[in-house]
Image (cartoon, rainbow, N blue to C red):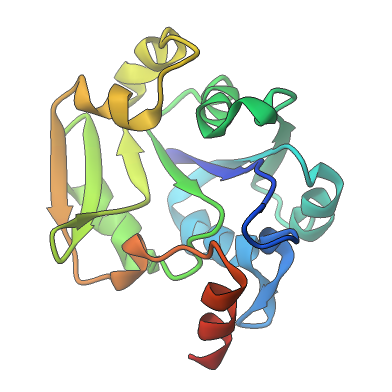
Length: 184
């Protein structure tokens, strides 16, 4: 079975509050991501940083979730990717924690696809979650500190998987995004 990494280490600076704990569908946003992913993963690593204690509190009910703090979260998202990958032993999904619209079926589509890296696409736009083969873990851990996920991805053969899931391209970055989300 695959494993999962959910990135939740940032400052939510455009939101001015911890967006991971805002409520959508009667759950914190990050819990919506966990709910979609959990049926396809033997364990889920939630990588925290700035809002570590708040996120631990909202995800503690999930048996499959392991919370790991990235003490270098101030260095950016890629440092959280590396922190999460250090906890992984299998093929894995990787997604930021502010993608609450991803459908469960999308995970199955990516599992069924081929390739060492599989990226969902909706209307020709690349999205999340990204599927990464366990064969790339060592390579990913050896990336330079100033790298990023896009640079890493582009070094390898990628299978872009067309999907009808609009949720793969929608994240919550601002208060306006969240208010729009609440209206849907």
